[in-house]
Length: 244
Image 1: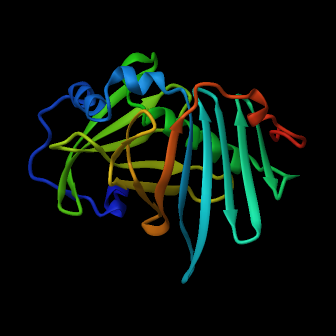
Image 2 (image 1 turned 180 degrees about the vertical axis):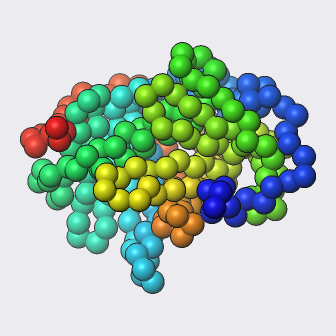
């Protein structure tokens, strides 16, 4: 089964005539321009939403602190529990209510993929970085809107697929495969909507995540701000650190 179908993408009759590079140039302009996308290296984003666990919806809030290219912190609060994920270069950690937990290789890999996706969604690196190849995926529709897909391959990273609105060039969806040793790979897709100019550039205000075609999470952006300065202690890794 083609993984694109899990996103309910409906292929159109014709393939996109626009090259991936030309599409990215339009997309960069639509999201605020190369200068603005490049300037915001550090930011903090707050979201609220629900995780879908079986038939239940579990409310959560998430505060993400990002310092590109290699630092990521996510603080998720669900009920009385607080889960913190930290990534600082080659080091990573998982905390539950402030107490370090064992971090599996699977969790580490997914953390790195999350950071890589954030870097990719800045779009400018796709045209400037070495070791990046772009492959056209053609035209599809998402919920009635025509989109154009690009497969992004970067040296040392798994492939990421990006889908842009054909008319506006705004990012409408992404797709990547989450690898887990000893288990079947998980196809994770995200759909983006309600784009806003906030925190330094144009970004999605709503995100819905699917795993193997099943809705897993829906969230809305509540705040986004650019950080002029950031304390390295924000990303300090406590023991136990990255698994070996």
